[in-house]
Image: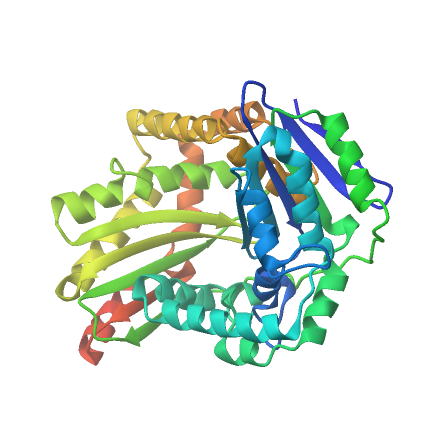
Length: 421
């Protein structure tokens, strides 16, 4: 189903042939993200991603965009905690062109000083923009509570201080240590032939030299009491973000956490949506999310709440978290959650770009790719009792962190804090 080859220098290629598609999606995944940074260079992975679009020895910044967009393709990239990915979706016959452009960006960015200074200014404005958006900044505050003093608890964009101080030699050093073939996965999905793609990448990447692996700082979990952070801001609406430390990417309970997410806050049928918004009118926006990393994870609840109703909204949320940890979900609710989980999974893999992301992340993170059927089989094994056990283990106040942005008085903060004890 999935084909995989490894070059002599360690670079991995994974492909999935999707016939009767006009498009092909290509992703170049680098094992380099926010976890590979520290306080002194925080944001360097994200800054490097930006600079890779600013020109190479072969293509100018304008040519990079025009080459891809000029044949109907799209070009993008993202930086996460554990990866950086450069990606394109293009008509399949133009895949050699896309591979040529993306590989040149990854292997040979100019990192010109004028581009560095300009892009630092852009990112500094980005940091300021997110700080002005309480619905975004509250999540940064929550990360700091969940993983204090750890790179996972720091903004991917960095700080005003760390970005301002970034120097070109830091970027070239970071690029040299992490942007090498043994730390790269190429993921391709679409109407393509594995053998032909392998021949193309061998011509481009075979001369690149592998480097020694770079390890990131592991997480040491020791939270034994609730944590809270209140950020005073005169807003029309209070924004709260709650997080419970959860399980890592490969933990056996990962799918149980996924099902709890669906039942609690993934859609309009969820408990929190019904209780907080529909029944009590305490919030317009409320939902949940879960994230898994190599050695840790977290379950999130986010809501935008009327300034006068924060205590009531938080009380209702905590009541629902306690209920799901003490009372088994009904068979009907459990079945609907599983159907939603599996349906969303299968639909997400119909597009070439989504399938490329599916393969690339798994191969980069795990060194292997599970098929949709493998995942469905794992989900099928989860029982109602597993949800109760996992909820009881995770949804405890001593495992809870709360960040809140709004115009709360000291008296209101004390009242809210009392709920967390």
